[in-house]
Structure formats: structure tokens, C-alpha cells
Length: 432
Image 1 (spheres, one colour):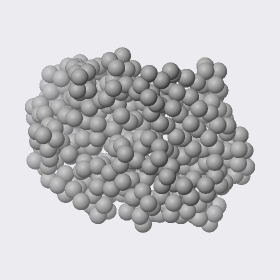
Image 2 (cartoon, rainbow, N blue to C red):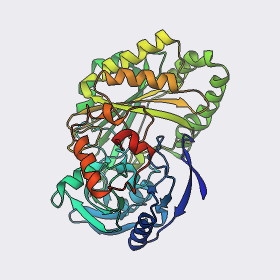
Image 3 (cartoon, rainbow, N blue to C red):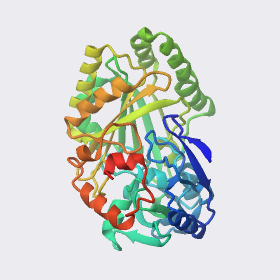
Image 4 (cartoon, helix red, strand yellow):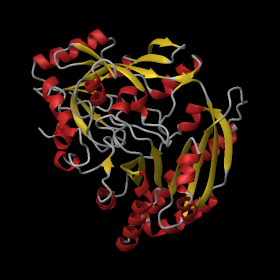
């Protein structure tokens, strides 16, 4: 047995690791474990804050199942192995003259883990990463390999794209890519009142818009990323500016500030005010994936709720009111993003255009009261929790916001009746 911990340090488990190097080996490991009555769970980067990747049985480490299997530049379809890390995939796609239409702001995850938990970026006309999936190959509990797509086995496809690891182990993912493109990034400080007054125009008028609100202030940092014409010369951040902004200020200095405010929480409002006013505008043009993702080294806890897009201002107001009433002091900015609705059964944007509000707390400080309060506020707006981030919801409460949850559970009963891929987290969110 080996002790495994996730990136955030919120989950640990004693596991029996297995590292298949081929899809055939993956099938054999799953079939063998099932025959012995062991549970099986694939793990990617371990970047989920929840116990979605934990197991008391065989832990499939998919780092050897990595790389592009097939690429068709003419139509943009690219098949990759499940353990491929996003940052490796993005580099490889660029060399092929291709890009993914949208990405999240972290690129350390595996492609299979990212889609299975509903990873998303921001963009009113764009869905999460799973909406860019064209087809999947799943290893089922008996070790068989099953392919699904929107045209071939559409119900399994709509369930498995954000499948929580509950239906089978993803072996390969075929992605719908597009010609490589660059983004012009424009980042600037503003006020919460200004952003909310123009929110619809900002969200619909930019390819990708998001903002970060500094609690205990009315200050925000806005990010607008828009495509440039093909052939536009890249103007990336200089090495010095990249190091200063993205390495030193956003990580090294931010770590030090959080250590200080952990010892002296009363400093949080003043520090937030100083930090928000110290931000300066910057703009650059770079490869799309380099603009989407940023390095993150400060350890934190995170919860994110998806609500109907129009509910975002009221949700933020509710959080601000609770902070005033409770006296809770929060040093991490609140991240706000947007995505188009989709038709994937367990996608947080299923059936509606969505606003995402993510709250964070430094890992050395208690997060429970803050997260529970935000969760209660978000539930009033029919909020849906991110599957890979901390929350307290169960199957009964989730059934009211996911119309296809019972269909998903029924499909799971058919494909994995003995719960080979089960764990405690799936009991919590899907039922036994």
C-alpha cells in the first residue's frame, strides 16, 4: 500500500498503485481488480479538492498513458491518451497548427481528469472543456473497451463527458480542435460597481471575460482576452514582467502576505485594499494557451458554484453582506467567470448560460464557515457545485438542480452494478 495525497492536502488514502502503459494493460488491470472484488479509481494530477479521486483499492496512475494517438489537421480531430497533461497537450497541438477553443486557468491536470470533473474557462459563447470532446473510449468494469460519441451511443456520451469517474475509466479522448490562434490579453484594475453596471456588455462583448473581486473592498481586477487576426505578430510579456507579475507578485509575495495575515487576520482588509490599488494595467499578445493558464504555487482551498448568469450580481452582494455581518476576513480574491450552456448531463452549465463564482481560502486558515455560508447563498440561486472543488451537497439535494441525475444513476447501475469504480464521494453525490 502507498499513501497518496491530493495537491491541496485535503484528501489522503492508502492505495495500491498501478501504472499501465497501454490501453490493453489498462483493460487488464481493471478486469483483474474487478475479479478480485477490489475497487478501482483513476487519478490524474490529483488537483481536485474533493475526494473524487480517492480509493481504498487500486489507484490507476495514468502518467504513462500520455501523448497524441492520432491527429487530423484537416478537420481538427485529435485523439489523445487519457493521462496527457494539458500543458503538454497544448504545446503538442500548437506544433500541429491547432488549439483548443477554450481552457481553464490551470494546465497541470490530465485531459481525462479535467473533463470528468467539469473543468471550464470563461467565455459567454463557449462551454467547458468537456464540450470540446468529440468521442471517448471507456474501459468498463469487465475490462471491455467501449467507444461513444454524440452520433454513436449519445446517452453514454452525454453522461461520460462529465462522468465523475463513475461509469468507467477513460482510455482515450478525441477532441475537436481548431486552427491555432493567439489572444490579446488586457488586464486592468476597476471597481466592482463599474463592472457590474456593464456586466452584460463585458461578458458578451469579449471572447473571454472574467474578474477578481477583493473582499472588504469595492476593487476588482478585470481580464479581457480576445482573438487576434491570423498572422498578427505575438507580443508576449517580457521575461522580467512575467517573472515579476506571475511568479513573484502572484505567488512568492502572495504566499508571504498570506502567512502574515494568518498570524494577524486583522490586517486582511488593509492588505486587500493595498493589493488591489497596487495592480497596474498590462496588455500582451501570445499563443492562446499561454494566455489562458497561469502558474499557481500558493496552496489554498477552493469552492466554486455555478449559477444562472443573471444571478451573479445578487450572489456577490449576498457574499459581501455575509462578510460584513460575520466579521470573517478573507484575503483571497473571489473569481468570477462565465460560460455558455450545454447539454451534458452533469455539466455545471447543463441547460443554462452560467456564471461561476469561486471562493478560496489559504490552506493554513480555516475555510469551513466561509464556504458553508457561500454555499447557502448560492443554493438560493439554484447553484451547482464544481465536482472537483469543496462542497457539502448530497444526491438528494443535487437531484433538484440536475434533471438528468437519475438517468445518470440508472446508467451507472447498468455499467457498474458492483461499484468497481465507486468511492465514498460518489456515494455522497450519486447515492449508493
